[in-house]
Length: 139
Image 1 (cartoon, one colour):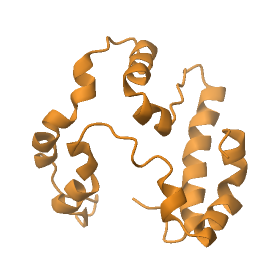
Image 2 (cartoon, rainbow, N blue to C red):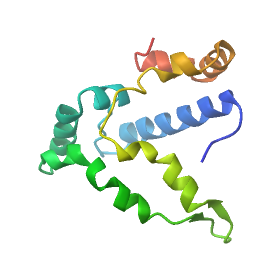
Image 3 (cartoon, rainbow, N blue to C red):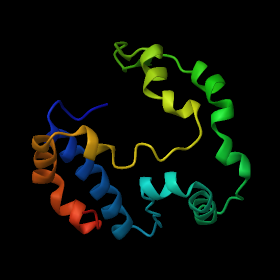
């Protein structure tokens, strides 16, 4: 599902997705609620309550307990197969990609880029996505 192997590809894919949603929200009478990942994982209950209000559905505390049913749900995942029948991702790979769903919401990944990306990777991402990061208020 990666837009490409290079950090500039990752940045371009991120910019494309964020701008597509923001442009659609400006050009259509469809409301959009932007939610920051860091805010969601550090304050999940109020953010989920806000999302529920936005989509006009009742909030239920069980929404904060997704991990209690995650193993059973992940067991339902099969391989992701293209329209031509080629396996893009095996069932095992899909479960591995979603392993964090087995635990409760955690803020441990907030700021992980600071620990895991090299200076060159950060510079490459910012060369493509820096303006949007600034526009969104990221440092």
